[in-house]
Image 1 (spheres, rainbow, N blue to C red):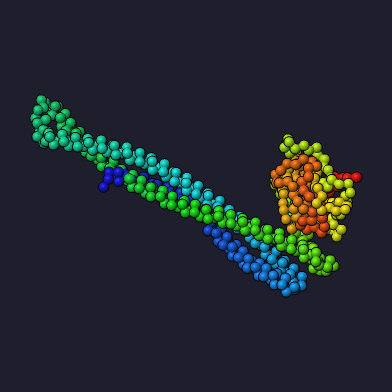
Image 2 (cartoon, rainbow, N blue to C red; image 1 turned 180 degrees about the vertical axis):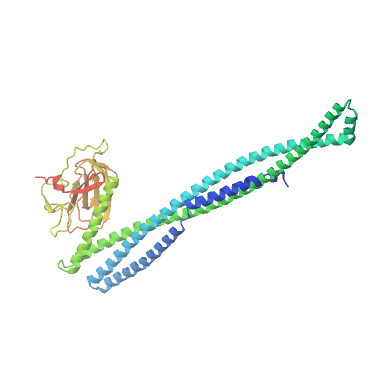
Length: 447
């Protein structure tokens, strides 16, 4: 058995107790997300069930188109599909949130394990130093014992007798007896110290081996946690891709619903019900834009970059004198909400230039939205924003800075639009409170 095997037990016993307590504490702080994983599985089961329903409705829509069934049945299947797609979007949002929570927990757990391993490694290093020093001490003590034994052997028992016989007086005899007694006690103490040092060395080696084994177990646990982490990260990415796909599908289906709406009799119950539903969806879109402005846009008191000249005034975004307004703020003629003004050009609006009402930055540029069509939202700084919907062409890119009067798009009829026009909006943001303003309080029609 190697000499260093003697010294590990004592320290290792202490390590085991400390590590057991540490693991219990870490487990309480960073429990593995077993429940979260079950929640994700439940969400995936619901998602798969909805996917089957969506495919069934798609098949119905296809059969309805071939058989020329009533628009009412088509609308019913389409609305069911849209409802299921929206439910899937909600599920994917929840799933991504649950997975991100799991990932956060795994990262914390891995960090805890790394810190634990670092602490054990520090103790291992300290123990190795103690073992090395103990081995040196044992070697020195062992050499002293051997030397004493060698001297005792060479002198023999007669030497002690000769030492006493050679005494010149009683006092000398007593002194020499004390010397012999002290020598014997020294030898006993030396041997006892050697035995204790060997026992301690043995315990330290046992403790060291246990600590190293514990480190290896922790490293294996970290590797497993990292694999779980990678799997969840991949799941998040896959779910994000599915989410984007489902949002695109909803957008397409909403566009189909708008097209169907135009084929209905405006006095029919189907038309009224569907119009009401689409109006509610448009309100959701408007709220999403408010949230985007609040989160990413400028606020009052925040100016744009120095290279953007902005005197605070807006110009008419259709630079033509023969303009007219087909719908005003804040409502359509039927009373449904209208958050901007619809601008047209006499003689034909399609393809006409749309210019930036003020210098600013393209905060958002979008294409093919079921309601807004191709659209632009400009941030002019100081919490002022303008929006341009239903464009036939977009001539700038997201993040691009523009100057007042610069042509940014062409007028069109994309999205939910019954004819070519520019839907123009003005919004303000004050510390996250977004307000939809009457554009005619900011711009005047050219004369």
